[in-house]
Length: 473
Image (cartoon, rainbow, N blue to C red; front, side):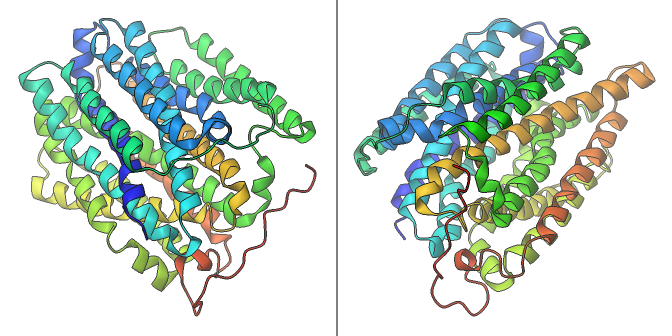
């Protein structure tokens, strides 16, 4: 397997992962500087994810139309511009808009990079390729919390966004120098109606849920936005049935393996999306730690994630997708629930060990579920499957952030005081239960599901997979 391509593409994931962990660690300091609350700043986190949800659906079409290499480099450039805008923001609205601009770049970077990788990799090597893709990306969460905490504690938070400038420029140079040139393909006209409806659906639901739990805007605004999102989602479903080339090819969900990987992975990511928001806040508000101290604790989970990458392919080859994903989702959810038992008296060595194991299991789960999404998708349909999986991933993470903030807001309104340690404990228990529900989706998989990708069983060569049904198109 050529490891150069996944390592170069991982530069985009590195920036995104480091950016998100840095912001989560520095959230209280940013809130003080721009005169708002940490919970209100959740709007900025959600704005980034909303931008991803809106623009990811067109990533596959744009990669085919203009060439994946061209779109990948342009997306990094947009992300750099958004990062600079974040650094110079001095108010919540400005920060939210800047994060949205970052999200537009992120919407193209990761899915287009993954599309390049899937097209260049045989199915039998996909698990290993996904592992190599995410190993450098996991360095982002590894260095993000301590670097972000150090800069926020001893300098100013503005510099955490400027880190993306040299990283992004290096990524553009590497992509120009080493990635193979990808020519544009003959594509059908853009489904503009589908783009508008899917964007309204995704952004309406995510943004509305966030606003409902925020004191920054009236709750009625959030309820109306959620209603608009749900109605737009129904209209898109009706549109997709009639359109000749819908933006999101929902017929892929007729395949059980694809359906289980997307829906099960989305449920699990709701809990994962909440953890980076809750954990640093709990350490800083509930424990009274500095951002740097908080970052030095949370970065341990990234070490566990990196360590697992080197044995993930072997685990799936020995046990198969179904067994690993069922038990992996349950164990990882249990590790999230344990966070709800942390107190200032908990030994730091014990917390570090639990965070290490949690990162270990979650890394294995994500590699497997990402590879399983393409197990029974033909090469011709990869550009259709990639935006669907990416949209669901980002929506679920955004819902996790919205859910976490909503739980904290409801809990504080019940006891009528500021955020307390017990509020974070309740939040961890609830999001862990949501993540554990993902195991139900994987229980429906056949025992041999994805064996052509994992190599589990007696398979010696990958079998020929039947194309996903496209009846009705």
